[in-house]
Image (tube, rainbow, N blue to C red; front, side):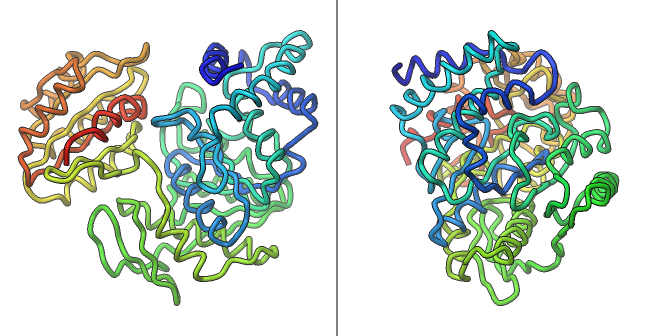
Length: 425
């Protein structure tokens, strides 16, 4: 099997299973020798901030000398982003090799039960490779929800982490914060240690507290005031946390709260016997990289790419954009099953001009339809079917000293990032 064939096979599978449950992934991993039982995990659920939290945690552990796996979703540029060890993506030939191994057992599961979903298969590929490569620890990001997510096939993790919780995937997870929080709490195992985001919605926190109590667990919630921002440059910051002075290269004030979460996780791992020096923490945070999270890809004008696609994520983009001086221009795209009207309401009034674009996937809404919605909040909106044209127009509108934000969908981020990366500086 070649790398392109492996991707073709993976993407040919159903996106979701016919019914919720862990039966198929459990059986698939049994046939593969239960690789997850040879690994230790930090398991991370939440609506927003999962990926950043996972990336920061993995970066610190790597700097501490541990062979650290990182499993995240979705990818922005290359599929191989989803499965990493010590910051290096799984090599394409390795993905093809492991996919061939997993595919053989998928056929057995299909005959016995039903065909596993795409995410179940990708989870199996990641766990198999991490175990085969002898990872000391894996930072495992939940795909969707938690309770029935394929990653929840693991036994009790070293630490379960719940990041910020908001409304997203309401058709699957439920239409209230409480229902969504309950699904996220599915990763909390009996007697487990849970670290959660320091400024959670009170209704979400109440659900978490109840779940931790019922399962005899222990909850750690960082102090939101423990990290003092001593230098705030919108897209990066310097933070003092106890005796540590940390350079945080991820933009947005929410990342300070994600940082507090990570530092609580690291402290708990140290109590469990992991050796993590202050220097490893400082270097791990300073060197973390995560694409499409308020990521600056160009200067003059500054172009910022963000994968935010739900109201909570787009509010973060809006809060950041509001702090930017000078001309502000927005390139906005969305999927039809997202709350794009709320996104337009949050973002459009903050910008001098909006370019609405089509996200080229079956779930994307047209530039014209999105533009009509945006004009309810900002009359200066232009629909663009061609992304290259949208980028060119946005740069001209912003001028050299302005700022262009690109957001609304991770699918848009994946499609437009290569264009932005190839712009002449």
